[in-house]
Amino acid sequence: MSRAKSRKRQRLYLIGAALLAAAGAAALGLTAFRDSVVFFFSPTELAEQSPMDTGRRLRIGGLVEEGSLQKLDNGSTVTFTVTDLQHDVQVSYTGILPDLFREGQGVVAEGHMNPKGQFVAQEVLAKHDENYMPREVADALKKSGHWEEIEKKNAKNMRN
Image: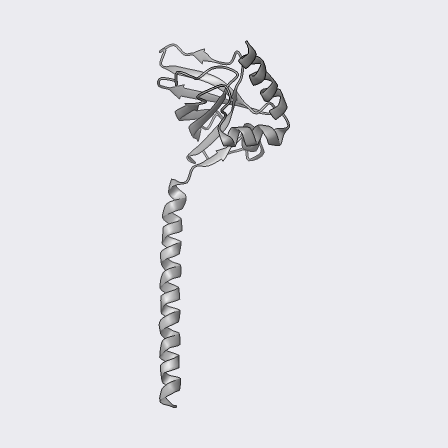
């Protein structure tokens, strides 16, 4: 075998080993990243994927249903319903709600589903003005066909 073929073969082995090492590093990185990713779901998407893994951390978003906010006995725990006007998700949250949290407004909650099918939130985010709605919530409402109703309601609220 000639010396040139031997060098080409060594180079080929070196490149193969480098590609294999890069693929291994990418696989390890993606595995670690997967554990920290929090997926967003609308109430309709949650209903379609039921039953949901109870240990999986996720975000839900939609509108806080009118008349659904209830304070439980201890005063620091509240329950409310998040809706995308097609499906609803019951949410339980212990803590202080954001100042801008209101019924009929957009909300994103991060937490997990419990075995009873209720969403247990560790964090609740509310919109900050009359024109803002989290992108995921707006996309879910547009997908469900109810975006125009929300726009009309916001326009009416701004006139009042």
